[in-house]
Length: 327
Image (cartoon, rainbow, N blue to C red; front, side):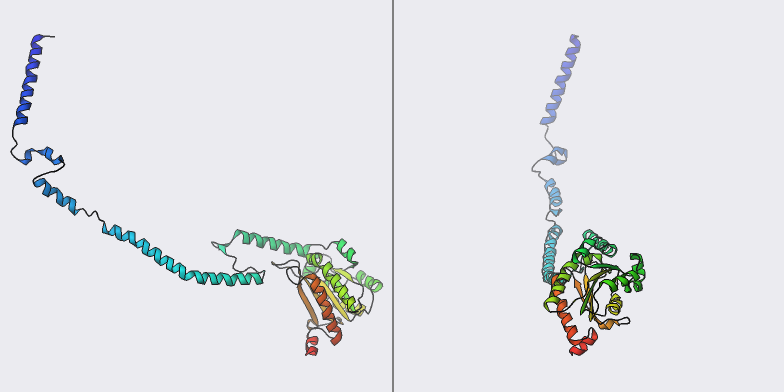
């Protein structure tokens, strides 16, 4: 390297160092020439008085924040108090509803989801509706009728659709059935028992055997004579009038499937009339209804029917006339 150049650089470095030392040793005249003091941990002079107001004016306590934190506590307390006030009332209402539900199979306060019924409620409704349709269009097992020894006859109805549209045809026997009754059935019996599917074949299938066997045995125990029991497909209640004209019994009892509902599709009823004839008015008939496992037990219903028959034979009346004579 060039010695002259080295010498010049050395001189420049020495001069620079001397200049720096002189500047550092030079006393300061006032605070304005000390900008570095702005970053000291403990500022002095006018800087302290300038910075303290900024620190003290900042409201670090946040009074509003403390107030807001207390408000939810007060609201929660109010909510708890309201809930405690409403709980006894809600519990009382639910207890009343539960008592009603135990007394009836009807749908009571089933609840909702938005504007619709709950899914399980809707599905149960559809299931019950389907069961009702099946009960109307179903068929009574022929094995059951054969086991009970029932003659199998027919009304003037051709099919179930006609049965629904033409109730009058269900009140009359077919010509063939009339001939069978005259040939095979016992005339002038004390009690003539008839069965029919009516509007619920399921009612016959589920209840007929227990009702009939109990009823028949109870009549025998009471010494009451019965005629030849038979079954009429697609019959109506007033079918007993024509049967009364043909066989001339003292009492006709028709066990018939009732119109199914959304609670039960297997309800059986027993209609009773003293010496029914064509033109008998409805006020002369009596009925024991709601015979099924969820209503009147079939066996109990059979035994009860026998006691009703005894009363009818005693007063020689049924329906409104029986009530008047009993006084």
